[in-house]
Amino acid sequence: MNITTMEFGKTQAGQTVHSFTIYQADGSFCTLLSYGATRQRLLMPDRNGRFQDIALGYDNMSGYEGPGNSYYGATIGRCGNRIAGAAFELGGRNYQLAANNGRNHLHGGLRGFDKVVWHGEPVQMPEGPAVNFYYHSEDGEEGYPGALDVQVNYILTADHSLIIRYTAEADAETLINLTNHSYFNLAGQGSGSILRHQLQIAADEYTPIDSELIPTGEIAPVAGTALDFRDMKPIGRDIDNSEQAIINGCGYDHNFVLRRKAGLRPCATVYEPKFGRVLEVFTTMPGVQFYSGNFMKPDNGKEGVRYDRRDGFCLETQFFPDTIHHANFPSAVFAAGEPFHHETIYHFKTR
Image 1 (cartoon, rainbow, N blue to C red):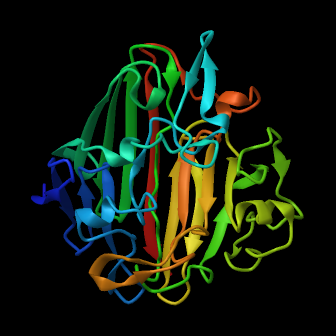
Image 2 (cartoon, one colour; image 1 turned 180 degrees about the horizontal axis):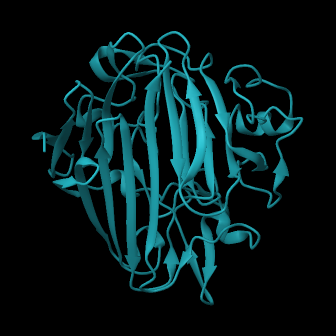
């Protein structure tokens, strides 16, 4: 097991944050932070064997706690994506959440799982060296019912896969929709726009949104729309299309309905033609949010580089947004003692 643990810094509240770097023999490595169970760095080779960091993030805690942090690399919970009206009913009771995205709730609230310090522990898994992160969310935290125990396991394999496994269990009925908010740029972080990246998504349908990015409840075909990624195409080709779906998302910020309904299955493939890196995503979740960085603002990233709008993309595997309000969507409600399991694999190769 080749993992280095170091002190990364302290939060504004004085909590110590550690970094865990997982190394592979060929030079690929991944750095994880106990703050937000966050993936900070990910170095992968290009077609010529040159390693670059392809993950967006910060070099210090002031960046991660600063106002410009757009959830870079963080674990999102208790419930990722949006909940309309920042409220829901469960078991005959109404629960009020923080309205931190207009009148709606986003990514777990004002202090979601991305803004807490987790306990990290290096471990050896059958697939390779790994880090387990643990967090206990108290009953009522950010308005959610039930105390929740969460574990996120990151594994870096010799064949360039980053495996993320989530498990969680609550002592009362609650919502659970954990995901990872990694921003990727396969040409290297700080290299500019991702609009020339080519994307394919294993989805024939998506969930349309209104002007607040809340699903309407409809499940619609991608055929004939700017959201048709059934065949690989450049991200930038239709990103400023005049269709209402694109206008509402300010580009791409949409949930896609994956084809197969159970098990680990293909989700998306991304190809960057200049350096030849390919990202293949597999997941056990029913949906994936493709976000093209439309709301990114100019910011200082790692190693002194600048980030700007659409300099990174996200593929957030998930239950559908606002699923609690749509009976036709897969449910994110878990009973007391009912385990939540989710696995997503980010596999890298070149061509």
